[in-house]
Length: 373
Image (cartoon, rainbow, N blue to C red; front, side, top):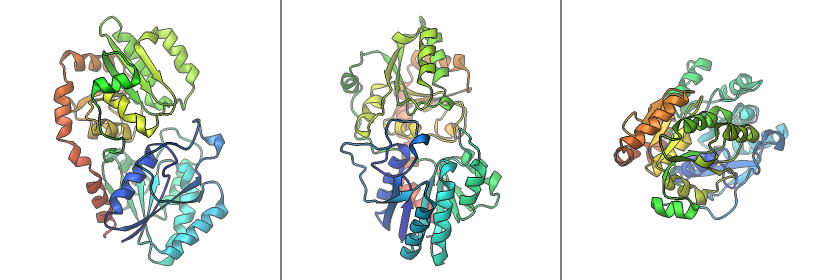
């Protein structure tokens, strides 16, 4: 089968580029697959981070054609014509924010004019966490040209069907991120990060307000004097950094934190997860999360809030805990319970039995089954 994947890819950084690299590796085992990626992904004015690319050696370097300019309609026409001429059986887009709707919609509409190519969209989100004007119009423009949709959680499926009730779709859970290298021991990871041997929980990923780091900091303040635990924050600020620094001072939790707020390169990710006892997702909203699947790869329990599809993958009292969102007291109680009842080993054993459900082989098979191939 001839497949084109059009999305972000290494050396562009972030979880979605990781996802596409792993999907390429799985699909290309039995199919003729090429990847088209961006020469300009975001205009600098829309990108809150320090760099859009990642450097250094990595196992994720895949062959790509660097063609797409997300803000140039003439480029969209050119890329669409190229794909139309190449005539893949399946054109796969990864969709995570409506900003790309006009670009992806124009390319897919042109590509399909060859009468052969079908379009499949893998949706992280349909309705984004941080809404902007035009979101629904951009999404509808793109989705009107799609033949199939893969949704990464039931919450995303609900959002899709609210816009397109008759869409041909399937929910396939986010596969495990297996691209961050082999695990290391907790002591080795802590030594690498120069951390002391103590109770240690992890908040990982780009820091945006909807991810609720401020709520977790309030939980940490509630635990002072009750539990000797430290929070490791590993990720770059995509929200107002000063707001979080002021909160740390106000709550008096500076000594309970390790802050690693530069971008975490791929080769370093394993150390943060392996050093931790558990991973915390205090999100205010979510559809699904790749962070859970990194945690699962390293067999780390997760304590998360009851938002989006997180309850679909974090099994209550089996692989972690689910707590009420925006309730720092409930989050603090869950962290206390995790340590008081010494759940780490039990949860890790249970995670071991869950991992196969989230393999890339099963995900790729589900994609091709939906497309009727």
